[in-house]
Length: 362
Image 1: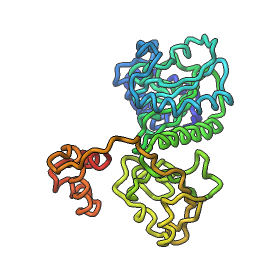
Image 2: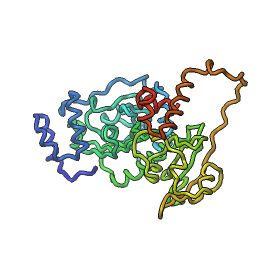
Image 3: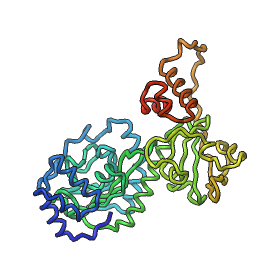
């Protein structure tokens, strides 16, 4: 979101907004308008000093395993970005969906007062410091640029920040990666690199799935084995478990949110029978037809990893089967009987669609 609005005009808009003039927001891009409104609703005043809450866990260890997992996936990309664009007066970090910093790259001797508080374990949301690029990315699932007096707090007028949202296995926003600093950078250049870093980080989340086939897809085979490859996580029975944002776009799947129940035969309905038989078989990338005039190259990257060896147990009678397992089996049968119509299946079981989906995903 680049801006052509002059800095003095933004200063005037901020002052007018502080006095209650909502019309003054028209000079800002719509996502920034929403962020200014959320900041004010949280009780933040444009002229105040930023509030930095205490570090969680002293910044030494992240409490949430999901945060630790995301941080591990993001850290290699932050290191590469820092090598290219880092330096004194700049910092790069990843925030989780609540705005908590979970990974960071910064200069070891950084002493700028506006940058020092940005540390792993500190929450930097709109209720604390007003409008920032990560706050906009997390709220609206968009790449964001906030610089100069586009910030809600006057104190951040010298700051440039740019961010890219991150998505989890269900296509939901789970964080944002950001560059923040004092000065100016080329937003178009940075946005391209940060988008690729976000895609690479999301792809590492898929590598953590051990009980699925992992497939790569792309129209152009030269983009396989790059951050621009689509990824599909597929169960042994051919059901699609998850797809990254590139694969969702390539295959016409929902852009956001959990996927509906889909088999690989349904996803690749335009493929020949021979092509569909090869979908879950190891081998080099091969062309798979999607429909009239459309095809992708698909490569089987990995089969499900073998589970750890366990001592064999005696077969269980139905009465001995855990309740959760019985519920999952009932959910699966209902979904099959309803031909994938989860709303109908949920009504037949007397449960919510969300509960049904959780049972099917267990």
